[in-house]
Image (cartoon, rainbow, N blue to C red; front, side):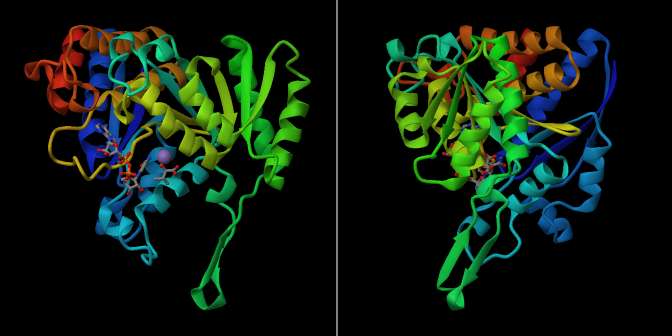
Length: 356
Ligand code: NAD
Ligand code: IPM
Ligand code: MN
């Protein structure tokens, strides 16, 4: 198979983890006789520094003209600490999602058995947890009108959804529920928000086409509580952009660490595969970043964009084997991990490549 992949590392640990994700794709190509070609593009702070624009036109074209995008992370403390900055790295990420029509963000929460004790949640509560979030990605308060008024002393953001936006993410989630345990949880705040009432109304309409799927609604506050109380109660979850952002960072603790969570952003065109974590400047340049989220994002890329299921499973199994052998990055180690088994980003990447 011949495929062209845009590699977009972005900022901070984005660069460190994406180089491991890319190495895994290269390994898979040589092992299975595929030809993958790569093209790098700038986004985020590095793009602002080089061009003044967090998503230069050229970068978007490179992504549009590729078969899939392997993305890292954006962000820089300079902007996090300056609320007045008009140009921000995150604008590049949001524009990429909008321009590529990436309305569905799939965030699998897969707990590797070996990491049962890496979480702060009790093993008996966690064992067997396996959740798939469908986070809507191109609507909501992220893209609604926002403004400062009253001479800058008042600000608002608009939480906005149209029926078609809810319907298309709902269909993806219902379709997926059919292939899993036939249960779907929709998360909203319909007891307060009008946009959530439209959300729930639309979910109920779409549900008529899926009588074989058991639908449950939860308010987002209760869902946040239940996720920690009883993670196994969750299977497929569909929710809006903001609630999905927050709940999946919370859910990363079910998988042990932010460094374990991969995602696939799909929709109208080229798919983007990205860890859910950010640029993590607290650990940038120290070799401490866990690259498994990027490696597992590469596995999602192989499966979803290229239909290479066997290759994708091979990558997941290699991660599993490295964990079974006892190797850890610092974020998934605990007090019982022997210090010599705690590896840096590139070294644990090498272990994964060796298994492949
Ligand atoms: P973050 O995800 O970057 O980091 C949160 C915590 O998790 C930090 O302690 C970090 O060290 C740890 N962590 C994250 N990924 C890790 C990994 N792979 N291995 C080990 N530890 C890991 O979130 P934040 O600190 O809230 O944000 C930092 C910057 O990243 C901000 O500028 C934010 O806007 C941006 N951000 C970008 C994305 C993205 O590009 N998709 C996602 C989230 C945050
Ligand atoms: C994510 C991030 C982004 C989001 C930020 C950086 C804009 O947190 O990908 O989860 O909120 O979607
Ligand atoms: Mn997030």
